[in-house]
Length: 328
Image (tube, helix red, strand yellow):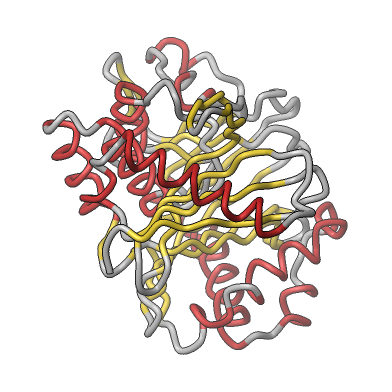
């Protein structure tokens, strides 16, 4: 799991006056003209059908000229999620129409819907898409229901002589049979018990499962960010800054702590940097010692996770794990 970049979300606490003065515009689905909305959503329907069928040549042919350099990444968004896509049934959730105006804002912020002193309305959203060419763009969010569980598929289109594909993102919406709302409720329960680490990690997992894309905020997603910020432990890396952790008579340089769900377990992952992983046995033992020390300091983790993995990462990307099993 990637660490969250919270800078964008904290910057989205704006007043109605500030939003009204913004040069870029965004329309929610109800406000998009019928003909335009139909064209956008027809393009999205074609894209999702190509993705489900594994039609890579069709996807490539529909990619916007400005995104040809990213074509492999866009196609990989579908091919890497082949198992989730096969046999799934798409259901349209919503769509947005973004217009940069003649001079795109460098920070790429778009505010969609009605904003007031208390924030955005229930159907509103905000997007952070810096570096866009001047023009019109569309964001379409669909839900995929299949044997692998629910997923969200978000497509971005650019108006380039027709709506051309500019981005494709697929994310799981459940972990071990539970959706993001369930993890949000669990996070709040852990918070009420004073289990700060469990609460923070479950807030993060809730956000991960509920977000359609990382560059979008809704009222719910914004509230989750505020709640997780309020409980973030000081010994958890944030903002890509490592933290020092002392245990076993040594100091570990922890670079990431995150949730790692699998098909059968809900695990915690701790990554830390080491000069070398050449001595596998010694490094693996050291990784297990770190995982054991972390569980000993925070026994609350036994309530929330099946396993704790510590990963020793060297400068060349070498990864030696050590695991402590908490429950089966």
